[in-house]
View 1 (tube, rainbow, N blue to C red):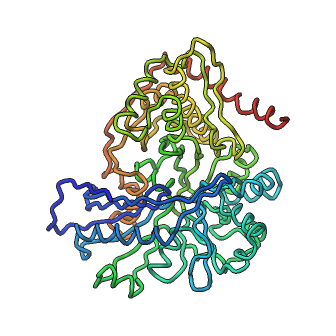
View 2: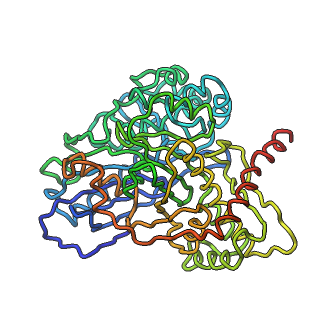
View 3: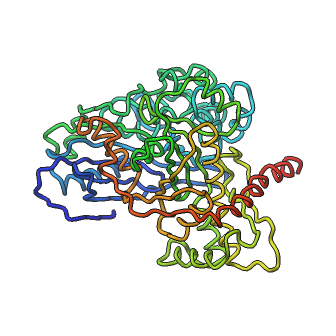
Length: 516
């Protein structure tokens, strides 16, 4: 566990809010007071079970035990009677099967599991796949619970046929607390099974998957409140009073809320192991908007923050994990060891912008947005004998950044031009990388002083659900930008010229791969 305290008065009578973020790397708890001040951050590592066939699973019961431990740690610092609510954020796209008693029949299959790629590839180019994408807002990819259900149905029929429910990790957590199956609209909207315009399970998706509504949870609002905890869990937490539990939403949409980015001219960029670019789009768009997205084939997701606020954008598989791979294998600098990240950034900074015309396509783990190709691969392009390790290092950093720029450009096609990008995640440790993003994107890059954007978004949703704030726009009063990076126009122009070449790499080499 990780403990962080900040001037905490153990005996104050302020209302406190606990946010639980169910990530694929860690379960996290953030405790804040009613001024938005972070009082405590706790983490518990989550173990992933993987193999060379694309398996990526986690034990949902162990994650539940993490949550119990984290909540107890928060209670040790703030009296339960002062807790206004406990709200949740979670990684999208996990799915698991449970029996009639709620016992897991499988581990939770995470977004990173690619065993459904065959079914995703078959569905992606079909008319039914395009139609499903149009109404659900979830791109057709192996990450999608819809595609995972097709895989389960065809390759594990005994489990599929015996399953009473198909649920996410967060739904399992809520079932363990309350004995009922509920899912917030934010999580439902990322399954490929939910019509994001009509706010109900999508019949065409269910029919394709071979299930009906009874196999899925009841869909509730992000602000839904549950209080009737099961007696045994209440006893374990030593609670004498009921605490409101708010399901909140998915981590991507809540990260936008956590940054205060609720208008369509501000994007949010997150780079951790993977990465994403997201834009908030109020109010509800018409179905034609979804059709436009599907017909363009630009692969943007369209998920729900609330029933009236959408978040559009795209995720990448290849964020910090690619830099970690390069640093460990070619620079002998394990990125997670002390000071090595800064050493890698210094090496990258030793090369000029553009890395002496060297480009890197970072698709080492296949890719989601914008190409949605589980079989995509990475490459260095333009490699010459004059290139040294600093050029390759800078090319890797720029390649990851170009990938994110490509998604940002897609979001801007149908929306107001973005003037600023709020950034969160590991990338914020480097002023060099922040300035590189500003120069490459031609946008102001802004860092918010936020402990964890997704968890803070969940906390703010809890404040909204319990009436502590009357409108989500009020979250801006809890957030203060800590740094701003202004683009250098002279550097931006050559970056855009290189970007035009970068965009041609994947289509060109996809042609070669398809004829290989």
